[in-house]
Image: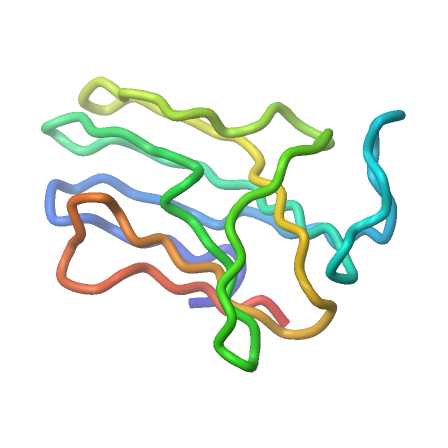
Length: 125
């Protein structure tokens, strides 16, 4: 999927990669420069299906062109960060996840703790 694409779970929940920002500097006074090259801030929106559900930022990772995986990092974001949340049926959630990754095309992968048939994958140019 591309940025803006929506993944639908078996229970009817949806997760959308709304936007991506690349930065070469941190936003907060205590954020240093990215160790890997750039900070990648992804904005995720979710809608729980009929059974409710959860969304955990640590279920998301970035995969670079060489196949290396990068988990979320801590730092200030331009919008509130996504926290682990239990979402009631039909509930909505939105938040940012920050990654420190090499600059270049990558993929955002959502692999749930209790996985669906396939993980959700978004291409980020």
